[in-house]
Length: 188
Image (cartoon, rainbow, N blue to C red; front, side, top):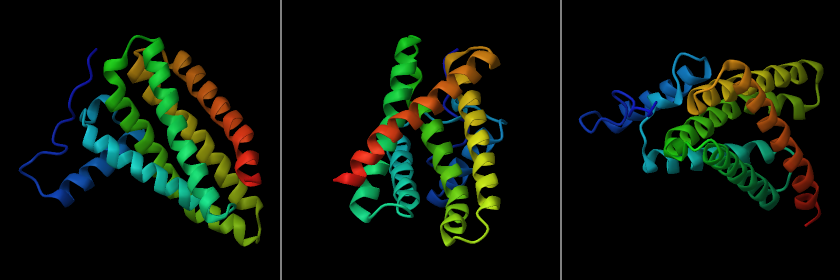
């Protein structure tokens, strides 16, 4: 299955604001499993913008626990990790032609979930009643794994079970790399 171009998104006859709203709406639809990566346009421009947003939201989240330069580095590593893992996964499956839409979907949904996590992160770092934000973080982690599985199912054209395995491995690998790199960033 070759992924489509996403009806109505980035239509040149519509205004820029309408296009942005349509893209955000599509990421939300992917996050709640009503659309897939194939419903996004295969656009390098959109991918570049989404990766930029992914990095900026990563900076904001990392800024709660790291100083500015280290937050920048940590977020950049997180964005590059997403790019690398999606690229490698699709290449191994022989589905490299799906990279633009799959990576746009992954980075866009991760950015969307990161936006949702921002106030929870602020609440957690405020130091009052950390049990509630911790539970909310757990919910976001589970949601993130479910979204990754949903995107993987469409991008890899695989079963829901195999997609869930891919999503859990993606999460574990990302966490492992962050665990290895994070302390190094904190020391520099």
